Length: 190
Ligand code: SF4
Ligand code: SF4
Image (cartoon, rainbow, N blue to C red; front, side, top):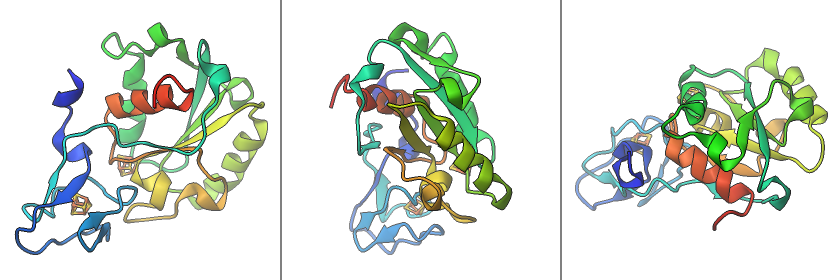
Protein backbone atom coordinates (compact mmCIF):
# COMPACT_ATOMS: atom_id res chain seq x y z
CA UNK A 1 0.00 0.00 0.00
CA UNK A 2 1.45 3.35 -0.96
CA UNK A 3 1.09 6.28 1.41
CA UNK A 4 -1.59 7.78 -0.83
CA UNK A 5 -3.73 4.65 -0.44
CA UNK A 6 -4.23 4.65 3.32
CA UNK A 7 -7.89 4.60 4.46
CA UNK A 8 -9.07 8.16 3.89
CA UNK A 9 -10.92 8.57 7.18
CA UNK A 10 -7.69 8.00 9.11
CA UNK A 11 -6.54 11.38 7.75
CA UNK A 12 -7.60 14.85 8.89
CA UNK A 13 -11.19 15.97 8.10
CA UNK A 14 -11.33 19.47 6.65
CA UNK A 15 -14.34 21.72 6.17
CA UNK A 16 -16.06 21.67 2.78
CA UNK A 17 -18.54 24.41 3.66
CA UNK A 18 -21.40 22.05 2.74
CA UNK A 19 -24.13 21.67 5.36
CA UNK A 20 -23.95 21.26 9.13
CA UNK A 21 -21.47 18.93 10.79
CA UNK A 22 -22.23 16.73 13.75
CA UNK A 23 -19.45 15.13 15.73
CA UNK A 24 -19.96 12.53 18.48
CA UNK A 25 -16.43 13.15 19.74
CA UNK A 26 -16.77 16.93 20.06
CA UNK A 27 -13.71 17.26 17.83
CA UNK A 28 -15.03 19.99 15.56
CA UNK A 29 -14.17 23.53 16.62
CA UNK A 30 -15.71 25.92 14.10
CA UNK A 31 -14.23 25.03 10.73
CA UNK A 32 -11.32 23.04 12.17
CA UNK A 33 -10.97 19.57 13.67
CA UNK A 34 -9.01 18.89 16.83
CA UNK A 35 -7.33 15.84 15.37
CA UNK A 36 -6.41 14.31 18.74
CA UNK A 37 -10.12 13.95 19.55
CA UNK A 38 -11.23 12.65 16.13
CA UNK A 39 -12.38 9.02 16.15
CA UNK A 40 -12.36 8.72 12.33
CA UNK A 41 -16.07 7.92 12.21
CA UNK A 42 -16.99 9.98 9.12
CA UNK A 43 -20.20 11.22 10.74
CA UNK A 44 -19.31 14.82 9.81
CA UNK A 45 -19.53 14.09 6.06
CA UNK A 46 -20.29 15.91 3.77
CA UNK A 47 -19.58 19.06 5.85
CA UNK A 48 -16.06 17.70 6.38
CA UNK A 49 -13.99 15.41 4.15
CA UNK A 50 -10.61 13.79 4.87
CA UNK A 51 -7.59 15.58 3.36
CA UNK A 52 -5.86 12.31 2.41
CA UNK A 53 -2.51 13.15 4.05
CA UNK A 54 -1.58 10.31 6.44
CA UNK A 55 1.34 12.19 8.03
CA UNK A 56 -0.77 13.45 10.91
CA UNK A 57 1.57 12.95 13.87
CA UNK A 58 2.70 15.79 16.11
CA UNK A 59 6.35 15.58 17.14
CA UNK A 60 7.12 17.59 20.26
CA UNK A 61 10.59 16.25 20.80
CA UNK A 62 13.08 14.12 18.87
CA UNK A 63 15.94 11.88 19.88
CA UNK A 64 18.67 11.26 17.32
CA UNK A 65 20.34 8.57 19.46
CA UNK A 66 17.72 6.11 18.17
CA UNK A 67 18.58 6.52 14.49
CA UNK A 68 20.24 3.12 14.06
CA UNK A 69 18.61 1.09 16.81
CA UNK A 70 15.18 1.88 18.23
CA UNK A 71 13.49 -0.42 20.77
CA UNK A 72 9.83 0.20 21.44
CA UNK A 73 7.52 -1.14 24.16
CA UNK A 74 3.76 -1.25 23.64
CA UNK A 75 1.80 -0.28 26.77
CA UNK A 76 -1.96 -0.84 26.81
CA UNK A 77 -3.61 1.54 29.29
CA UNK A 78 -7.15 0.41 28.37
CA UNK A 79 -7.61 0.00 24.62
CA UNK A 80 -10.20 -1.76 22.46
CA UNK A 81 -7.34 -3.68 20.82
CA UNK A 82 -7.35 -2.00 17.43
CA UNK A 83 -4.50 0.44 18.05
CA UNK A 84 -2.49 -2.56 19.30
CA UNK A 85 -3.15 -4.46 16.06
CA UNK A 86 -2.01 -1.55 13.89
CA UNK A 87 1.19 -1.17 15.92
CA UNK A 88 1.88 -4.92 15.78
CA UNK A 89 1.41 -4.74 11.99
CA UNK A 90 4.67 -2.76 11.83
CA UNK A 91 6.47 -6.05 12.38
CA UNK A 92 4.88 -7.82 9.41
CA UNK A 93 6.73 -8.20 6.08
CA UNK A 94 4.79 -5.35 4.50
CA UNK A 95 5.81 -2.54 6.87
CA UNK A 96 8.87 -4.47 8.14
CA UNK A 97 10.09 -1.93 10.69
CA UNK A 98 13.15 -4.11 11.37
CA UNK A 99 14.66 -2.89 8.07
CA UNK A 100 14.75 0.56 9.74
CA UNK A 101 16.37 -0.75 12.93
CA UNK A 102 13.11 -0.60 14.90
CA UNK A 103 12.07 -3.56 17.06
CA UNK A 104 9.72 -4.48 19.89
CA UNK A 105 11.19 -5.22 23.31
CA UNK A 106 9.73 -7.09 26.27
CA UNK A 107 10.14 -4.61 29.10
CA UNK A 108 10.15 -0.80 29.54
CA UNK A 109 13.58 -1.23 31.18
CA UNK A 110 15.02 -2.02 27.75
CA UNK A 111 12.90 0.44 25.77
CA UNK A 112 13.88 3.65 23.99
CA UNK A 113 10.22 4.56 23.57
CA UNK A 114 7.01 3.74 25.41
CA UNK A 115 4.11 3.49 22.97
CA UNK A 116 0.93 4.05 24.97
CA UNK A 117 -2.53 3.13 23.63
CA UNK A 118 -6.01 3.26 25.18
CA UNK A 119 -7.93 5.40 27.60
CA UNK A 120 -6.35 5.55 31.01
CA UNK A 121 -8.24 2.91 32.97
CA UNK A 122 -8.21 3.52 36.74
CA UNK A 123 -6.31 0.32 37.39
CA UNK A 124 -3.63 1.20 34.84
CA UNK A 125 -2.51 4.55 36.31
CA UNK A 126 0.01 3.00 38.70
CA UNK A 127 1.41 0.52 36.11
CA UNK A 128 1.80 3.38 33.59
CA UNK A 129 3.66 5.47 36.16
CA UNK A 130 5.95 2.52 36.88
CA UNK A 131 6.57 1.89 33.18
CA UNK A 132 7.50 5.56 32.62
CA UNK A 133 9.85 5.50 35.62
CA UNK A 134 11.48 2.31 34.35
CA UNK A 135 12.45 3.86 30.99
CA UNK A 136 16.18 4.56 30.70
CA UNK A 137 17.32 7.92 29.30
CA UNK A 138 17.20 9.14 26.63
CA UNK A 139 13.60 8.16 26.07
CA UNK A 140 10.45 9.09 24.22
CA UNK A 141 6.79 8.59 25.11
CA UNK A 142 4.20 8.19 22.36
CA UNK A 143 0.43 8.61 22.76
CA UNK A 144 -1.10 6.57 19.93
CA UNK A 145 -4.79 6.86 19.12
CA UNK A 146 -7.58 9.21 20.19
CA UNK A 147 -8.07 7.38 23.50
CA UNK A 148 -4.51 7.90 24.75
CA UNK A 149 -4.33 11.47 23.38
CA UNK A 150 -7.67 12.89 24.54
CA UNK A 151 -9.60 10.09 26.24
CA UNK A 152 -11.70 9.63 23.09
CA UNK A 153 -15.41 9.51 23.75
CA UNK A 154 -15.29 7.34 26.84
CA UNK A 155 -12.41 8.09 29.16
CA UNK A 156 -9.31 9.95 30.31
CA UNK A 157 -6.15 10.68 28.35
CA UNK A 158 -2.73 9.67 29.65
CA UNK A 159 -1.70 13.32 30.13
CA UNK A 160 -2.40 13.19 33.88
CA UNK A 161 0.42 10.66 34.21
CA UNK A 162 2.84 11.59 31.44
CA UNK A 163 3.07 14.22 28.69
CA UNK A 164 3.65 12.54 25.34
CA UNK A 165 6.64 13.57 23.23
CA UNK A 166 4.90 12.24 20.13
CA UNK A 167 1.17 12.24 19.38
CA UNK A 168 -0.22 9.91 16.70
CA UNK A 169 -3.91 10.67 16.02
CA UNK A 170 -6.46 8.22 14.65
CA UNK A 171 -8.94 5.61 15.80
CA UNK A 172 -6.93 3.62 15.12
CA UNK A 173 -4.06 5.32 13.28
CA UNK A 174 -2.94 3.32 10.25
CA UNK A 175 0.48 1.64 10.42
CA UNK A 176 1.94 4.02 7.82
CA UNK A 177 1.17 6.97 10.10
CA UNK A 178 2.69 5.23 13.12
CA UNK A 179 5.85 4.26 11.23
CA UNK A 180 6.17 7.81 9.88
CA UNK A 181 5.93 9.12 13.47
CA UNK A 182 8.59 6.68 14.69
CA UNK A 183 10.96 7.83 11.96
CA UNK A 184 10.27 11.52 12.54
CA UNK A 185 10.76 11.12 16.30
CA UNK A 186 14.40 10.20 15.76
CA UNK A 187 14.97 12.95 13.21
CA UNK A 188 14.96 10.76 10.07
CA UNK A 189 12.85 13.41 8.37
CA UNK A 190 10.75 16.43 9.30
S1 SF4 B 1 -14.65 11.91 11.60
FE1 SF4 B 1 -16.11 11.67 13.34
S2 SF4 B 1 -14.90 12.24 15.13
FE2 SF4 B 1 -13.76 13.01 13.36
S3 SF4 B 1 -14.42 15.11 13.12
FE3 SF4 B 1 -15.76 13.85 11.80
S4 SF4 B 1 -17.54 13.36 13.08
FE4 SF4 B 1 -15.93 14.10 14.45
S1 SF4 C 1 -8.19 5.10 19.69
FE1 SF4 C 1 -9.86 3.91 18.75
S2 SF4 C 1 -8.84 2.06 18.00
FE2 SF4 C 1 -7.45 3.01 19.50
S3 SF4 C 1 -7.92 2.04 21.46
FE3 SF4 C 1 -9.20 3.90 21.32
S4 SF4 C 1 -11.15 3.17 20.45
FE4 SF4 C 1 -9.63 1.58 20.05
